[in-house]
Image (cartoon, rainbow, N blue to C red; front, side, top):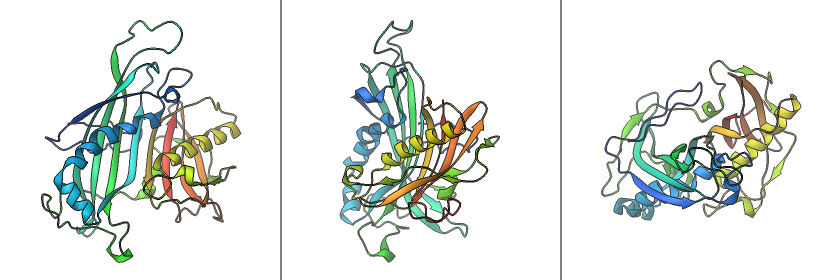
Length: 309
């Protein structure tokens, strides 16, 4: 069982189900996955989901039946944490992943949605790409963790049939897995406990992003990790406005996806930065570039918060 730690100031994440099958994989690092100070980039963790949890899920006969019926698990939330190493680009990430079905209950007790959650742990050997090797070089240690939620939906069906509250798929319960309490997608961008805001209200980032085909993937919309990079860059610009260091690296993040972005659309972040226990962080929402107010986040594509070191 994999049980990710809580994110600073936020509630603990659910643990993987008892008896969940663990799958393992080992992937080489890309050169850009390790920063100049020998730390692992947060987004370098995500390929492990495809190599472990997703691969196991796709082997199941019930998954093939589910996909044939038009039901697809679409990513709706990610929580990520990365450790500091130091690490060498010559190492390889060793992943352990698992998955489990669950359902979310509405306030009235009825099923609101069905989802597949995935858990991931990654290990790397201690090392440095250049210079003197650390005393414990070669020792494998935790490099990061990921928790991801995927909502079951019919993305290509009629609008009134897209939400899935019950399955009719051989091999799966009609309402599978443990019951979870609902979490509003905007809660991914709430202020952590004990944090102090540097910006009293959300402010638009100075940069607007125009999405092209290069930002998209085979799901026909902008890839989920593009949002993470845009958030990190926007937060660094806000830190600089406050006279804080911009030589920081995103180490923890949670992001909830409300609706996809597509090639040809223009967006910008509305952000607030904060300080918590000597660390800097940011929270905000990704809005259409034409949004009139940074405080009206009702049309946001995604809500995100993260911590930097």
